Length: 75
Image 1 (cartoon, rainbow, N blue to C red):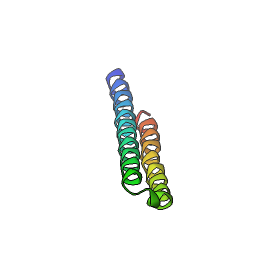
Image 2 (cartoon, rainbow, N blue to C red; image 1 turned 120 degrees about the vertical axis):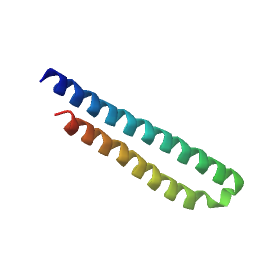
Image 3 (tube, rainbow, N blue to C red; image 1 turned 90 degrees about the vertical axis):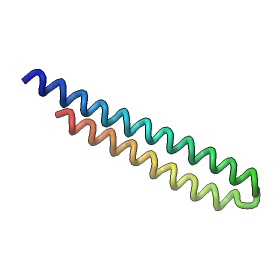
Image 4 (cartoon, one colour; image 1 turned 180 degrees about the horizontal axis):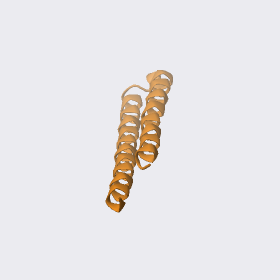
């Protein structure tokens, strides 16, 4: 009984940790590529900014999904 509860809690925390780390790495890479693209061609700022913010939002959504799945996996 106790072993099952601990295993479920560890699995949920591990799920959230991996999702959070993946989301943070993804956001960092997207931001770095945005800066690189704008540095190479400053005229593309509006287009790069729109697509960059959209992909950052999608990456953050994956982190939130990981939080939700981690919470439900621990119960």
